[in-house]
Length: 163
Image 1 (cartoon, one colour):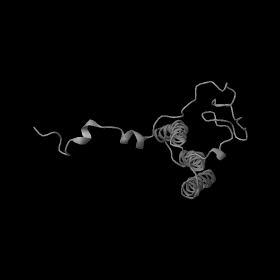
Image 2: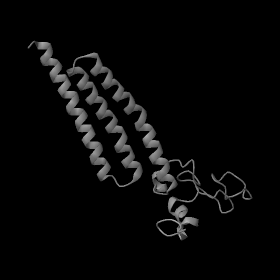
Image 3: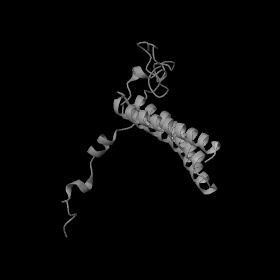
Image 4: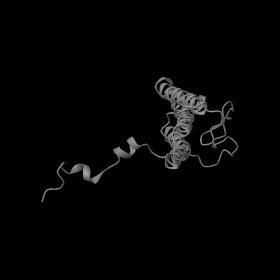
C-alpha cells in the first residue's frame, strides 16, 4: 500500500464521517424542532449536504467510472428533489394553517407583513387596497372539509349498491 492510498482513505473517511454526522443532525432536527418550517429546514439543508459529502467520500474511495457516474446521478437527484420537496411541504403546511404567522418575516399569501398594522377600514390582502375591494377568503377548504361534503356514495352500503 502506497502513501496515496492511505491519504485518499483518510480523506474519504473524513467526508463519510462528516456526511453521516450531518445526516444524523437532520434526523435529530426532524424529531426535536417544534414547528413545520424548522423541521423542513432541518430535513433539507443538512441532509442534502450530508448525502453529497457521503457521495464525494464514496467517489474518492471507490474506483471505476460506473460507480462514479452512479454516485453523481444520486447527488444530482438529491439536489433536484430536496428543494421541490421542501417547497411542497411548506405550501401544504401554509394552506392547512400549520405555520404560525409570527414565524414569517413576510407573508406574501396572507394579510400583512410581520409588524405591519392593518387600519380598521382596510380589508385588502396587503392593507394597500381600498376598503371596498373584494375580500380574499384565503385558501380553499381543507381536506377534512372536503371529506365532510355530501358524497352520494356515502348512503350506499359498504359492498356497493344492491341490485
